[in-house]
Length: 173
Image (cartoon, rainbow, N blue to C red):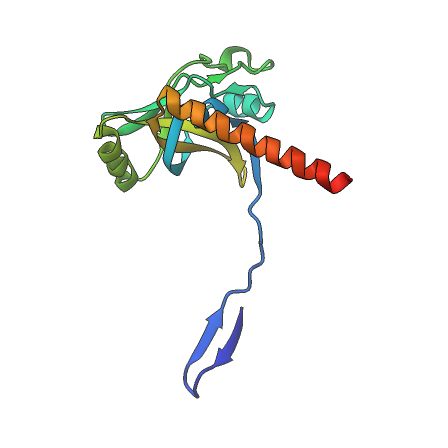
């Protein structure tokens, strides 16, 4: 920390950033969720996992495609996330599709309860990653898209791709 003086008796300190970027390693992404839903907000949550599940996640053997989160009894549970059994795990392996508890503060859970009681809102996992050696899940508060919304997104993406392609061709000549 470095300090400077405002007056004779007051010293103000400012923090010097040691770590500019946190070490985040993305394991899996749920691209289908961003296609099927409007993501209103995203929350970071921890997961309750066994040791063999963490080892399997480190190998990248996880699938978020059909998973979703539900609030039951004041706890947020993640359903449908598939973690393949660890090869050397033998008797310590758990069921690949078991429900897993998400670690959130009580205030965050209460806020999520308020969002999910609104019509059309649901909780979908967006990505799974390691942050400082811990497995974290980005949970999205989402609203389902209609078919015409999906078509609009596809049309916008195609138009952007076409513009980028033409700009690239014009700069080559």
